[in-house]
Amino acid sequence: MDADQKSAWLTKLDEECPYQVVLPRRQLADDSAIMDFLIDHVEKFDMYVEDDYAAFVRYCFADPLDAEIFRARFEPKAERFRLAG
Image (tube, rainbow, N blue to C red; front, side):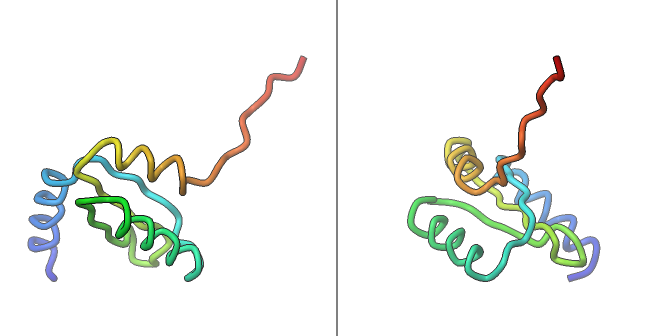
């Protein structure tokens, strides 16, 4: 796929599935859990590798609720900052 084709495809994807979640690429076992969840629970989605090194995957959803449920389940939990005091 050349740059123009990729740009056109990404534009169409952004229109059809505008609710997107970017996650770091995980090990195969984790990828399997993500795929099982998507196939079993999400009606319309797409995904693609975010960069040339396959370090990040962008998951794209047509329904905002699907994106939020996916984010809650699979987004890494970061430690919250605490104010010293």
